[in-house]
Length: 171
Image 1: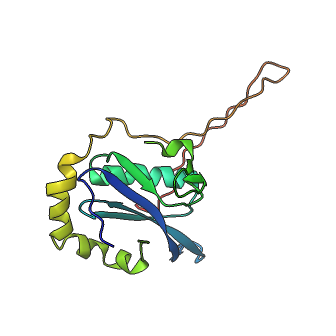
Image 2: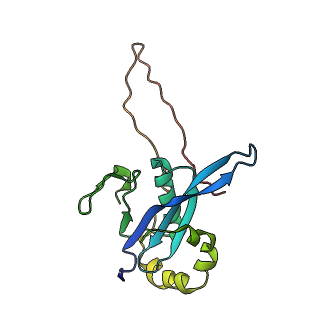
Image 3: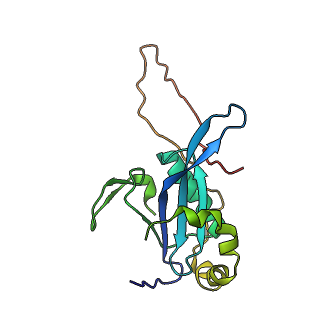
């Protein structure tokens, strides 16, 4: 069934289900990398990257990098029913994790993605359809943060732990 999308309207996001084995050069240990894929609806222009997990920090940071790659934001981001982005699956009323407000990908696509995108067709469709219709990105990119309630200790001190999540495998 063919579906047509308005330029700049939708960006579809999901993990590819299959993983890619990556070897740690220092230890020789093999890790299974998750493949995040994002596709603009009108042009089908595609962004893909590997991350260590499908955790919320990886999910959010992959979105930030995808929007940067596309040089703009669509009206809607349409996730599939993955656990990181959807807390309750429903065809009509899914419950989305709060940070996610605003046909399945296949691994064969990833090996040929640069050549596939640069053939001209999808790139030129992106440049003529989606790119002009995307909304501009904020000057400062989104930075993932976790918020927790703190309890004041008897000595009136609060312990604050800070870490930065940047788990993409891209260099």
